[in-house]
Image (tube, rainbow, N blue to C red):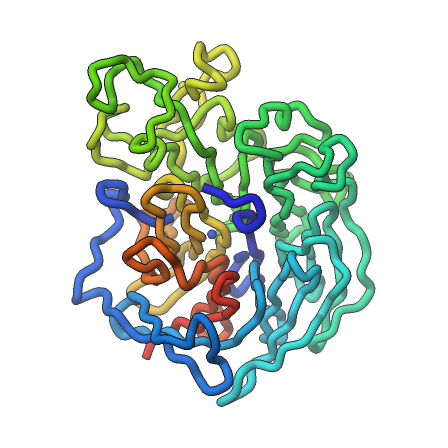
Length: 445
């Protein structure tokens, strides 16, 4: 699922390609995700132009991409996270570990020119534009900045008092302190506040409430809960019609929630932590939000099983119900999971979806959601990182199509971990990778 430092993410894109976050193991795939074949995918070597080498590109790296596409190292940047394109066609990248936002200016035939746009920030993460105003999500606040010609001026706090590891009541413990931000055309701001831990139920009664997507009104200047039970909604974006979507990192080490034998030893396995069950449960959420929606955490979990609780069952990651969490809600008294709105879409467990962006790509893809998944941090075997596309039509997202895979070696080790994928003004997809320290350009050849 999510690593304390590296699994919190999101990126917000301009109108051109809204904000800037699943992978599969055998049997753990979406029925509507087409299988990769030699007719649709091919393995290519990642192109590394002169001056952009060094580990992990000191050896040949290959990825699987759509046939007719290529991937190259566009820029080298230490620990890049979320990204957004500016109105004047530069790429901004947040670096929470460095406390800054970098601006990358494209140069024909050369690596982009990189410099610091903003520095001295507190774990900056989510980025979004509304016109020429840049919104920056720090761990404890949302700022606005006037942007023009590669420069930022007039930084001011728009929303303050957000919880992070420095909040006195949390004693320095906060697993998901990084914030995401998205901004509607009318100036309404949506932001994520992650949970403090894996199953920290006290987040649902905190002030401000944690494990939420919050909404700030430009009219009332007030911050209110928009959706709750969102363990770590690092992916946050508006679809082309203005609806808010979040991609969520769900819990780890879930207990088996059925009174039956799962591991084959003949005994009731209810309430046991069984690795083979944990590996595929709960599914990660990709939800279309509306005011008052509850995604259930930590009391209810989205269920991918076609045959509930049966070992070896097929999985379906679309239009899924919620079931009671055996550890936190065994009797259903905490929350009636059957009454929760079914989950629109999702990813296999422990995919760690981070950046989420809506964009229009060249045929045959069209308009849809780009989601970068970081891969698992404690699954055995590890869930591999990917960049995924889900087609959007009439307010709904279809099945997953893997755009890029191959970051993980056969032994489970990785040379890269994508964080965000955003469409550039040239039609290519730009992908940040905080492990490889790179920004890739995925484009038709």
